[in-house]
Amino acid sequence: MITVDFKRLSIRPGDRILDIGCGSGRHTCQAYRLPQVRVTGADIHFKDLVEARRRLILYGQLGEHGNGSWSLAAADVTALPWRDNLFDTVICSEVLEHIGNHRRAAREIVRVLKPAGTLVVSVPRYLPEKICWALSESYRTSSGGHIRIYRTRQLMQLIESAGAGKRAQHHAHSLHTPYWWLKCLLGPQSDAAKPVQLYHRFLTWEIMQKPKAIQFLDKLLNPLLGKSVVMYFRKK
Image 1 (cartoon, one colour):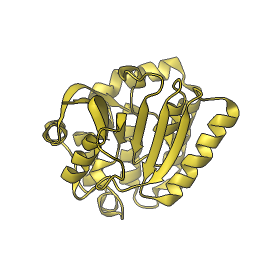
Image 2 (cartoon, one colour):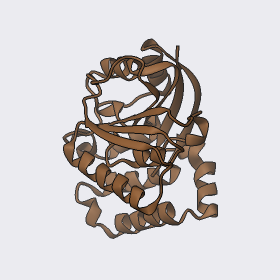
Image 3 (spheres, rainbow, N blue to C red):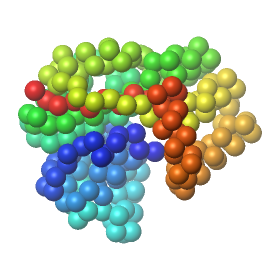
């Protein structure tokens, strides 16, 4: 599931890309497909890095790459181990809602970005997330879960205060919003519930097959139901 619209990024051969909070590597792998880039996936969880490595190796074996390079690193977003102004593009997708000191995290992701470089930040959108919190106490209190809900302006001000100016925004994953509402409504054991399993099967099918009609519906509903808000910034 790709949240970032890579068509909005002006990535050139030889560029350095950082995917901070990369998880299992969905955006790292997508970036690796671009021509001759140097992409680094970073996460604080070693288990996720192991899965990201497995996926990147598979992309290499299948020829799904742009003849660039990849690397992985264990890193805390509030104390990044790289020097100032290193990366041409930084991706921070679905990370900041987990971070206690999000202001320090924002300063760090801007610090390692080159002047005039692009930063992409996505977080859960306010209204869909607020409904999830209202439907399920376990959703909002689970270990490692979301500790805050951002309004669009709050997120924009957070990143701008760190030194980057907003230039674009969109919403993503409208079809995933009802899935999470359903999971929250049915409770902690909802993964075993038939409605949740059927909806998950539908989402997996949509991601793998990419039917044009369903993708069009997703885009049509994104302004209203998009699960994530995605913002694009340029470092000043």
